[in-house]
Length: 124
Length: 107
Image (cartoon, one colour):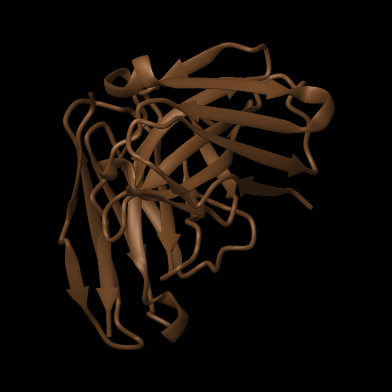
């Protein structure tokens, strides 16, 4: 069974740095093609992809947020960490991590499964 | 960015109805299109990947079709547990991956 779980602060102040940890089990981030992504969802709004780290340590960031985001992995601990600097109230959202999966037989990639999410509120 | 536009934004239907949700990409994404279901307070769940492949464990009343820029998610006979919000997502370009704005399916 594959599971992911997000952890981190529920409340951060404006200008602070947010650090979130995704702890997963049931798969290895050393497996060819596998990745872990961070996706967020402001209250009542749509999903927004933030960052992705691949098995080979390649990284992708949302261009509009690239200067504020850093994603790293600790394969031995089965963890992926996302840091976001200079937090603002508009960054208030539920933050999800999800496994990025590819199949050799079908095109593209997809996010499955997802963690339960963690609500982060940015307020002074 | 590849923009994903879903229609309608909300939809009222009844148990047993056949429902279709559409998703349009701002450029061709071939078959790199996924569908997710999200219930209130829960994480999204993958339903369909690669435009038409049913994820394991998902009921066969869900189906997906399309290629290029136009895609559809069809629920052949709505069940009470299907009332949720549905999102499409393209994986053609990872810079950035993008989702539609969502379609809320209500009773």
